[in-house]
Image (cartoon, rainbow, N blue to C red; front, top):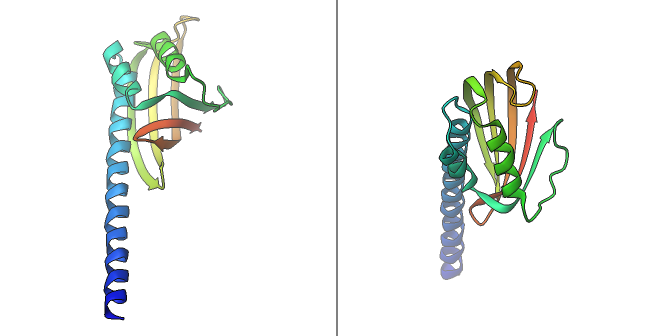
Amino acid sequence: MFKWITLSLSFFFSTLVLANSTEVKLEHFAKNYFDLWVATQASDASKEDIENYLALLTQDVGHQHLPYDSDDIRQPDGKENMRKGMLYYLGGHTEHSATLISITVGYNVVIIKYDTVSKGIHPQTKTEVRFSYDTTEVLEIENGKVSVIRKYSE
C-alpha cells in the first residue's frame, strides 16, 4: 500500500512539474514570437527580420486574419505565402508600436493579446493609412512551431 501511495504521489508531482515546465516554455515561445513579429512591422524592418519570424512557423502554416483572410486551412506553401505577403508590405510603416497585454497558454495553444498603433503608406495605393486596434492571436503549436495562426482584430 505504501509503495502505491508513494508511486501515485511521485507521478502526480512529476506531472505538475512537467505541466508547469511546458507552460513556461510556451510562454517564453509566445513572448519571442511577439517580439519577432513586432520587428517585422518596424519602419526599418528587413528581410532578415521576416525570416527570423517565419522560422517559428511550420512550412504548411495556416493563417486566418479576419476580416481579410477567412481561411485557416493549412497548405503546403503556407509559409511561402506569408513570406510573399510580408515582403509586399515590408517597410510600409512609417510608425509602429505594439504593446503586449497578455499571454495565455494551454495544451499546444498560445493566446497573445496586444494593442497596435501604426501609420504608413500603402504599397499599392500610395495613400497614407493609420491603424489603431486590439488584436488577439490564437496560435496552435505543433512540434515546437506555429502550425495555425488565427488573428482577430477590433
